[in-house]
Length: 279
Image 1 (cartoon, rainbow, N blue to C red):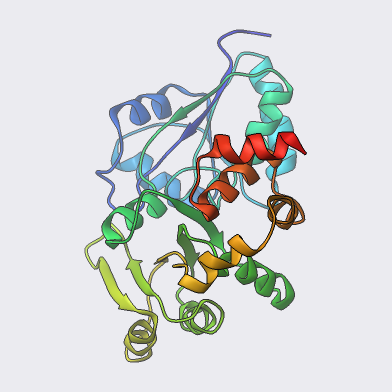
Image 2: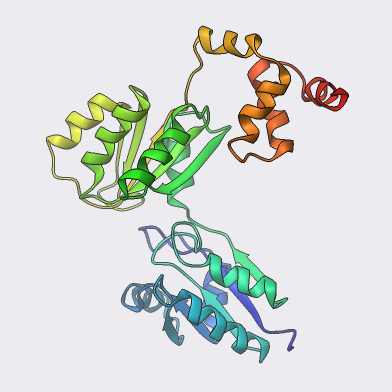
């Protein structure tokens, strides 16, 4: 296999075309093919920087087939750049399958970092950034959606969601119903002229977006669950074994359960690990 052949994951602007790195521009100029979600969107970016590149569609409906095809081209020495319509490929966009195929075929994969709507919204939200969970787009299947909210209900991490404009109102209602009243930040049209950041309670957010017609793509940032005194005392009433079983039954890896148990009980991880090993 030609050592020069490789795959690049290239982050692209999420709204403002100036938000692209020199390295990203150079890579897009040098590669043999730019694989993109929608050629009509990507060509605007390439034209803005006078980049002449061969474009090929790469979206959820052809990702599997295209990934196999691109891997064969890379083995022949070709360079392929994967881009999404906005942001980083593989984050709620095509890209993951290609990376997996490259790993299986021992193909070099390089990431060209850049804009991310999720991280941009998080840091401007005013909510805790030290520990966060990215959930992407929630399922529209009622059963699956309910399961997702069950998993988020007692999550202490800050939660990040994506949502489309025509679904934002219903999603806010679902958040209040399933997660309760929380502080929230909602970012719309980030880095664009009409960028808007809403900060406040979920109830206020519901009122806010009932009064105006939602437009643009949304990032929702939700504060994590705050334990009540009764919840903190609950762990003291069960054994370490019961506590361990509680997390293992959720298919959480054993190593991670030790961290969670230590956090729940407010003790060092080493202490929990030693107690488990004694059993």
